[in-house]
Image (cartoon, rainbow, N blue to C red; front, side, top):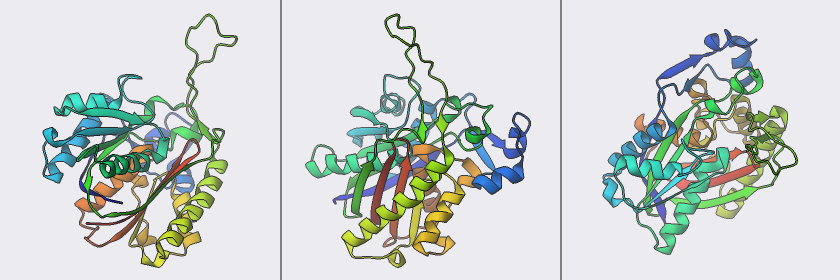
Length: 318
């Protein structure tokens, strides 16, 4: 496929919101949240903006790659929304890190990082870019109803990043969507347009948990098997399944279907909650910092989220 990851980075808000603290505002408790989701804490932006976090993660990724901002010739943001509707998150990052290049965002919700990785592959393979910075950042705390325990217990804020260049690490990538918005969505609203028949408020993120669970477990299993058939491999050949950190029960459901041990499925949802597009790159950076991923390891990375979207890639680490 012609690409590899040169460096990774992450950034998280300072504010840690525990289950105990949440229970002061909604009817819930630590035991119930852990049993339903596997989440103990989440990070929430207070003074930080998503542009702040994304720029910090981007600087870290560039530094680890051995490059400088001047070497970056494209920035791709993956987010459901930056600090502004426009300009894009990627443009805000470019200004903060001192890069001068093309920049745009993709919105595939929780699959966003894999979508951005696949887009980067196309740019590099075509020769249109050499060193690409991918920024995945979300501030979901501003999009959820903090009186709804079905959603506010799940989500957290954060940013992850990586620098992508030419290489042979990526063996397979595939994107998908089924157009079903009902399980998970956020209305855009109509503003104060006097010409619309019905005024619609922007509202909050809405989710039907059981439908998301069924979609994720079934679809991820199917996408993994498709990748394995294409590559002539099996789950036993994989060192790590780095999945979107949506819910510990979803991860366990996928692991059960694949009949693989828990140590192949790293998690950090207990610390950060569901960070949407940021969850995979943040987990990837943590594993690299801890020395868990070695050259030659086979990684399967899968995102799944609103749309409903899916993104799958298989990579042999270089």
